[in-house]
Image (cartoon, rainbow, N blue to C red; front, top):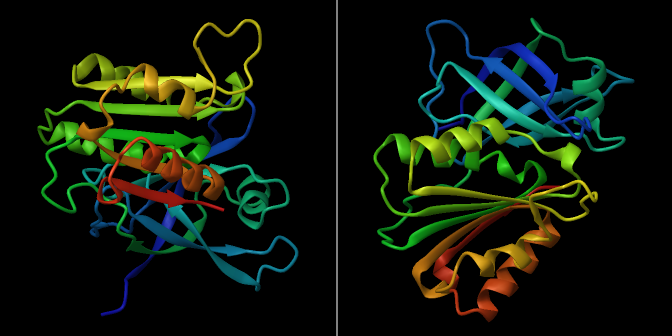
Length: 243
C-alpha cells in the first residue's frame, strides 16, 4: 500500500535559535484529516529549487511534535549554507503556502521491543527533533522509567526548545535534560563539552540503559563506537543520522 501524501498548509515559519541556525516550520493537515504516525518518524517534503520551481526534490525531516498533535505538525530545519531546503525555507516558504508532504516513514521509534532498561537520548543540533516528539509522548502516556536527554550545540546562540525541555523537567520528575555547549563563551554558566564528556558524569552503569542517538552521521558513528567500548549491547543502541 503506497504511503499517503497530503497537501498541507504552512502556518508558521520562524527562526528558532538566536543564531538563525534552525527554523521552526508548522504544517497543517487538510481539514477533516489526521496524520497518524509514531513518535520518532519522519516525512518527505517536496522542495523546489529557488532558480527553477519546476525542479522538485524530496527532503526528509523528523516530526518534532508528538502524535497527539495529528492535525498540525512541527518540524525543525537546520540552516545549511547553500542547501536546497534552507534556501526554500528562508527565501520562499511563507504562511499560507501549500506544501506537499508524504509520510510517515522510519523505524526510529520507542518500544520496538520489550526492553525494561532506562532511556538515554543523545542529540546534537537539529537531531533533537525526533526527541521532542518521543519524550513528551512517552511521558504523557505514563512512562515512569528514568529518561535522560543529552543535547549539545556548538554555541549558546544555537540553542532551541529550552523552554519545552525545562517545562518537561518540572512536570515529570523522571525526565532530566543535560544541555552542553561544545564551543562556549566565557559567560556560559552551563555544561561545557561534547556529549561524550557529559554522559559519564550522569550515567554510571551503562548496562542499565538503552540509547537513542540522532545527529550528524559522524556523531552517530562515533557515539555507537563510544557506547560499545563501555559495554552497551548493540541491541540497546538505536541511531539516526541526518545529512
